[in-house]
Structure formats: structure tokens, C-alpha cells
Length: 240
Image (tube, rainbow, N blue to C red; front, side, top):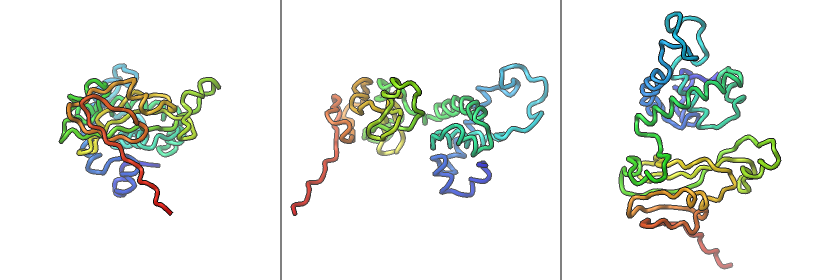
């Protein structure tokens, strides 16, 4: 079973599982605890009713510490496993895993917003985002796909099927600040087969003037106004 105490002394495994170094994890932990208690006040039960006994009474849950709660949701976000498989790592059933994922996600999002780490979700506010303003205006745009469960309906199966990945996926457009390495903007979730350029055209991004934007061939023809785009070119084939 995964736990914070077991993983904290294994820095490489900790980074691979959560996407964070141990110092980064620990710096975010206090705000996660604050956001959790703000969202779910200790004086109330999980159902929102007034407690009949003191906090901490009764059986101890598997995810009893805030460190384990945060580890649980970060591993899920980083690795995107099936809920059954994620539950096996934490000695939870699929139904328990589903419950805790939906309980912890709003807390994680709130904690990241409070600390200024949450990416912008409104494309028109990117130009004023503090994450985008850090350093010179140099951004990179990319499309990212993650696997999803195949719809049972034969008609609905077509939209999320990605020919590039040869599986069913969801897609999001990301903007990354090349100086800080942080995600500035996270676009809406789209079917995996959506072309990268079509995705950015449908949700126009407001860029800071004179921004430099690195892009790949998936964004061929994407030339937003006031932005200098750069795209790598393939090296010419060597003559035999």
C-alpha cells in the first residue's frame, strides 16, 4: 500500500508518482489542509451534518493524514489510472476510490488557486495571468492527450478516438511559460481526435503583445496577431 511515510524517503519514486519533489509537496501541504477544512468543516460529518461526537472519534480511515490525502489525489492526477487500479494502491475499493477522488479534487484545485499555481482556464485572461507575466513573454503551446474509457455506444466511440494515439483519449491545449516551466493555461477538455489547430481556433487565446510562441507542426498555420511564432523545421535528408 502506498503511503507518504513509505514514499518520502525515496525521492526518485516520489517525483515519478506525484510530479513533485518532496520539498514542493511539503510546501503545498499546509494550504491543502486549510482548503480541506474550509471546504469540509471539522464540526460537520462528510454528509454536512453536525457531528455527534468529537473529531477523530470512531474507526481510523485509510487516508487518515493530510499527507496521505494529498498523496492519493496527486498520484491519481499524475498517473491517470483506472479507479480500480488506483484503489488497489491505497487498499480501497473502486467505490471508495471514486468517492475520495471527487472529494479531494475541489480541495486540490482550491489550494493551487490560493497559492497562485492554478493555470488559467479562461483563454481571454491569459495576457494578464501572473503565471504568464513571470519573466519575458516566451510561451510554448502544445496539445496533450490522456487515455479515457471507451464509450459503449458505437456512435459515441468515434469522437474520442485518436488516430495518433490509436486509442480513445481526451485532449487539452496547454500553454507553458518557458522561463518558469509552469502551465499558464489549460484549455477545455475536447475529444481526442480534435486537431490541435482547430482546438486553439475554437477557443482564441488573448496573448500579451510581443509574445514569442513555440509550436509544433500540429499548429501549422496558427498565427495569432501580435505574436511571433517559431516552429522547428525538419533537417534536410542527407544526400547519399
